[in-house]
Image (cartoon, rainbow, N blue to C red; front, top):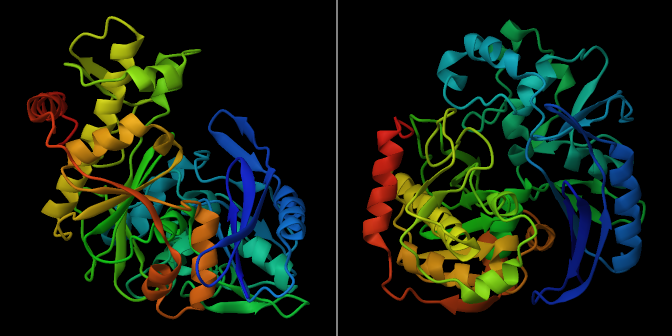
Length: 444
């Protein structure tokens, strides 16, 4: 007995096979390539299929009880009516249709004036000819290959294509104003719903986006528990009983498969700035030597911030002196921790449950110093899950079969370590950092 989770990432396809106790039985990965040209970013969907075939063959599907798939939020392609790809995959950060955002907002200002972002899928969909074509998100396309025909999408992947999560329907009136034919959009089901079966009889369940998958892998599925994913950028995901409304547009929510909501946001800041500021540096050596410094860097790699505030004009800055690599490194780590703290404060002001624990996932968890610093700055315990992979989160979702995901996660998700805060919150420097954001007008 076991379940497979598939993660269609930007750089690779990953598979994890786990049993009912959460033990990882096998795993596999295959690389992916993508093509960037200015604001355009594409992948060949055939590469997904080839990679998925390879990882499934490696982990093995004999005796498997179910498969679920996650992919990058907002990545899609167009298919013909039989499900064959007729366009490349337009990636989650492709901004080719940014000028369409205003047209979309004009069609339904109450719905999209705040939430719609120029890199979401809907502006790009509006820019394409949908005649005799269908929209398919990455996970939908792969699931269709596994079951042998077009499938429904899930509420999570459908969000950035314009799906109304409250009404649980495509916005018919707004799509009519935009000239978007409803028949081009897939049926939408809740995550965990069965989409069909493979020729071998394995159920394929509707998945979620990669950020939600990481949240499941972290077991952060109850109010007050949060998952913080830190890699190139910082993404927070939590749980709320009621939908959290954010007039700034920084916070958006997915539906919780068990009911309720999964609020969160994606910052433009994160660990990516380290490679820009410290090219060629020995980051492991710097991490071993790192210590609190009287300096902080707001860690943006490019202009613009999305969360915990929306500021298209935001730019990187440093307060204090960074005379060497070690100070530069420590100032960046403190800046990310401060953005994270500010994000949680913003969420609590909007009505989210007070933070009682944070599960840390993402590539930055390799830094033991940074993990402890984040616990100190947040002032709450941080947990390091044993298997933080989004693919593992999809294995957990498949195991739930659409019923009691939180309970399934409690049985399967294990915590490797817990780091308690030491009371060193760097409050004075944090106050200076927030004041500088306000002085520059970034927080509105």
